Image (cartoon, rainbow, N blue to C red; front, side, top):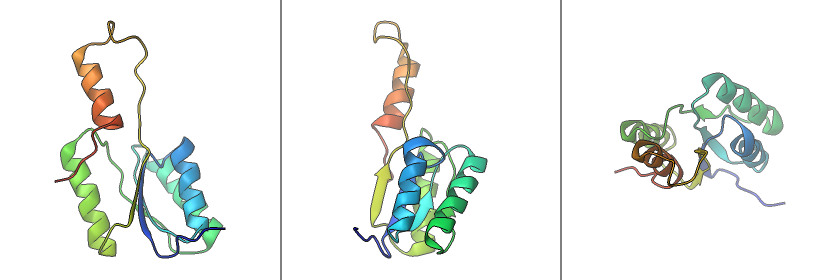
Length: 122
């Protein structure tokens, strides 16, 4: 099996689904984790699963909505402040808007693109 021992990893969308599963797998592989999501209670539960699966330190929780650029900057700053670096980003957060392009308004389009495509930190 592969090893991510000591690799500082930020996983977005870690509070459920693929992000939660990825978090547990990366913990088993020895990664040092920072977990992002909007649901703090779910993040805490995922963090407990990660700690149980590898017996290591509990992940850093950096909750927040990635459509807000100040939040994105804060998350990255917190990870760097705690661990001194960021080795791996699993940019898993995503949302879905139901309907075709002709039915979506510009605000909905912007929200989907900001979370699914544009994830930046200055």
